[in-house]
Image 1 (cartoon, rainbow, N blue to C red):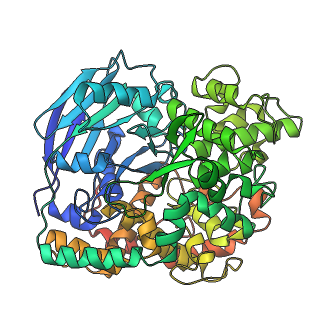
Image 2 (cartoon, helix red, strand yellow):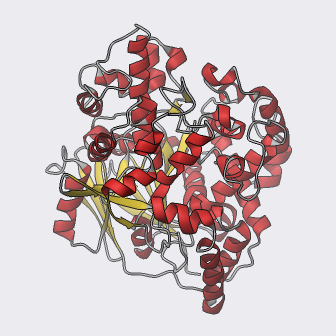
Image 3 (tube, rainbow, N blue to C red):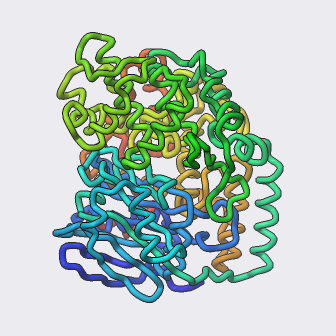
Length: 576
């Protein structure tokens, strides 16, 4: 396997440097999210933005076209990582860099150009103010189409706390506020262009591992039927049927008109074609036709956030609203949550933001005001936690550690509640362990969704496996039909090293614990492992937390014990 290196970028001084990533770091943290957490910890005083690839990027393995972005969230104050699919990770890997570590602030708007031949800082004054798609188009017109672009929109420029970073104008580093970090540092975009490859140590073993993985993906009903046929929108009917679809700001657990905004209806009325990330056999992305235009269609979470959560069943309106959010550069989950929060405030007579449940009137205008931090939208641009401290209604501000709750109502799947409470980046269905995979879909086996017994171990194991997926990097959907055993074989074939599923599990545990320790240094503890009162009344969270802490060998304060730290890190866990 080739040497691994990171590119350090000092925006304040306009200088670059390369540093080797030692093999022992790769062995312990793999790449992607794990490498991002390690490099963030090593440079914690600067609170850098870290963009990291994984060892399976730019290889023939399926479902590896992703990339990880880490930093300190302006929304939650925790370390966070965000993960996007597409081609950027592959192109970055081909430049010869496994990670970018971005420090400092530029005195003027810039974009980064990185290839396998040169690295440049370019002025971006003419791009500042443009939406994400226009930015991508202009940069590809200048640099050619054999590049990949990540960029922010007006929301990131203005520091909206849930601003996102869009990849090639269609995929998102959505949660946590990555766009605000870019904007704060004066970074409008990053353009990458590389032609290198990740060489396989054993091509025959690579071919065999690919065959085995593809066979499983192409025969499992979720990855061979539901997701390819309907995309993530196909989850709408299933989740709603289990009364686990948060509706009307989680005042309800199901949406009576969910079929009007689900995958079947999206396919019947608007689907033009489907596409996927590089090397993906599923192609879950929906390209829709709306008013004669081809646009990226909404994912399940967006259909929920801008649909069921707002009591809206107008699918063309949701598609158009999703497009506006992507162009402005805002996370649709947090956006839908702040809109639902505003609607409940009006419903309860606390504050009138001009929007109401079930009504489209005023929503488009308020979304623009949020993204541009204009008028009352400026308050909502801070997220529900901060907004509620200003206008009231804290009981309607549904978040964990400042990050808004996603679609899955934890009252219908207790493991999701535990996952939200303990996720290192705040309320997150993926970083929390995506327990609906075993609580609803029965993967790898069904677990009673309304029981708390055993959930501590189930959720912790799922969180660690997720950390592995985010570090290799593979799509989370890969774990619906394959196991870490298959990916250990893949990693062994690429690197020539002997990896087992147990090795990966230990690395995942190490990564999750490192994130936890970073958050501890920011003042987080068990007091923050909680849920909104709306959920706590019906979920036995305390019992699940007790079991979870015991399984993880953490103290009652939610902090890894000394023996656990020694087991995972030895004597090497030093802080800057």
